Length: 286
Length: 270
Image (cartoon, rainbow over all chains, first blue to last red; front, top):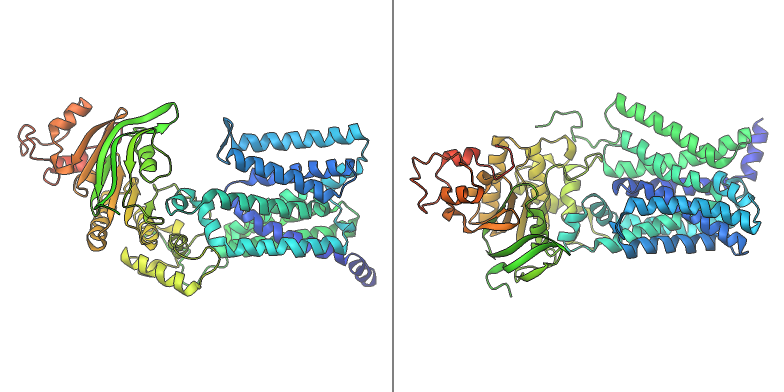
């Protein structure tokens, strides 16, 4: 049995590393979307990127190129129209419209062009088990440096996400930072889409942040917990998928959901972890 | 050149294209002065404030801001405007005020921490830096937000309904703190409120908004009971025994009845 596991791990080590980096990247990035209350965007971006993926497959182009092109176009359109209000619609309405349109057009393009439905299945389930070292190199080479950029800009990004009005009065250009954040999320999503699938992309943006908020006692702790939970959820999901021969994307989501529920339960039973000494988490308000 | 004034407005109309909110706004904001911006909910205070801060252009009229400089405004939002779901410490909150003064990319944490600590000390919360913001009382939260605004070393401090949700003791502590900061640091201040009591003793200039127009503009001490009755068309709960019948002797600072209860149209007595 041990021998079998070791062989499996050796065979799928690229897949596990891709899952690890994807979980780390999406978990940490998702905290910014939580802060900005833009999680709906986290659901729409993978779906829109998925449309680009399908279009590229139909046109016999590299799928990631199509996904990147379409998702950048979408974010660019949002930025141009204004994230607050677009053509008389709320930003949420525009994002929702994009979500449902992308989903419908993906299915229709598949049907009309005769593209294999395999592409749609990939988007739904992910194909992390077939990840190659090229996938890993792309993730590590582009995704992690981008996360480092966001980390270095974190102070301004946190202010802009939490209190954009104050940022504006301080003379900080809010819109370019927001657009940068959305482009960053798009890059991370495109890089992980083929491996994890649209559903798992959204799951890994949403769930680790939710779990982290329950157990972390500081904002730095929220980022650290979210990255860790994302990593564990993604790698754990791949492990479960391997063990029971299940699709990897949904198992990543279910594993992350389980971790989130445990964190929420633990967070209610004890004071937040990662409390700084003397921060008086349980002291009554003065 | 500041010309001794932070802002000068002449017949300004504020609002949104096709939807003017307040018309005919004329006032001056001398450096080091405190302007009270008072009106009921929905009277256009926030729209006027956003225009004053340069966040939206005036629809008509002329607004000059000779005293404005990038990063020179400290903004204290209404209580409850900030999401308290996240575990920000008091120091995290105050460090946000430093974001425009330091490099966007990197900065030694020790410098940020020291400057945040100085701002906290200025509001009497030097020992609270590591507590969670969401666990503080309303009054302490407001003082933290004042510290956050001070951390940016502003010339102008803008406070949007700073006493909303605070009890009398907390309000008094906060307003006294603001008086002291203005005096010690030479700050220009804009105090937005729907509670007249809050601005009477703590501002020099008053801008009273009512039904889309400026109902009173001028030195706060010149506001009389007759002005208030004329503007709102209702009896004002002020003991007129001391004031006579509304001679322009002013009501700021002398009348306990007004200080206790006067709320501008639609608000609730504090």
